[in-house]
Image (cartoon, rainbow, N blue to C red; front, side):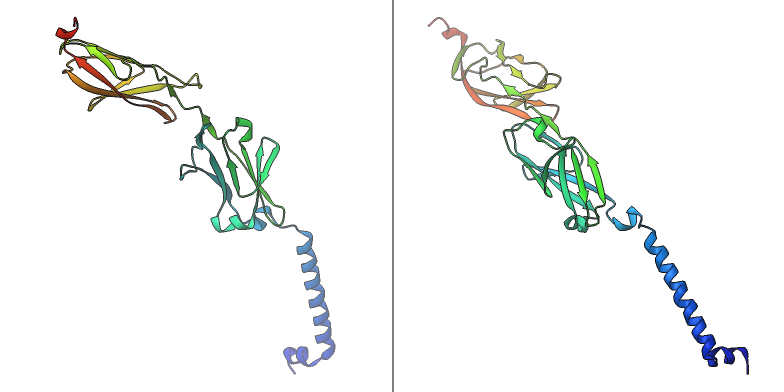
Length: 237
C-alpha cells in the first residue's frame, strides 16, 4: 500500500488532518477580524466636490456669485454614482449650517450665511472633507444722472464737441471697472474713463446708452436715453 493510499484509508489520519485544517482556518479568520479595513478599502469614494449653480449655469471651478442673486450649491462624489450613498454636511468654518446634498442661498444674505466646508460621511462613518470658498461680489452700479440728460436738446454744429459724462461705483473698493457707451449705432470702449467728447452730430434725434462691467463679469446698464441736436444757428432763437 502506498503512502497516499494509507492517508486516504486511515480514518485516524483523516480526522487528524481535518482537525488541524479547521484549527488553521479559525486562526486565519480570527486574524482577519482583528485587522480593521483600511479607509481607502471601505470608502470607495476618491473625492468629493460641488457645483455652484446660478442662472441655470453650473460652476465647479471658480465658485463666483454676487450678493444680489440667489444660487445653490450641489455636492457630488467621485465616482458620481456613490453620491446617493453619502450624507453631506455643510459648514461655515466649524459651524454646521445644514445636512443635505443641496445648499440653497436665497437673497438677501451675508457672507457668513454661505458655507466654506463640505463633509461627506458613508454608512461606516468614513468621512471626506472639502474646503472651498465662494467668491461673492458686489455688482457695479451706474448713477442714473448723466450728461446729456434724457430728452435734452443740444445746440451744436457738426464740428462741435458734445460732452457725454456719467458716474459709476462699486462696493468692492479694490475692484476695477470698465465702461462702454453706445452713441446711435456705434459702441465705444472707454475703459476707466467716465466722460468722452464726440462731434459730427447731424440735427435731429440721437440716442446713447452706457454700461459698466467689473472684474467678476457683473454689469449694470443704463437704458437708452434720447437727446436732440439743433444746429447752432438756432441757438439765439
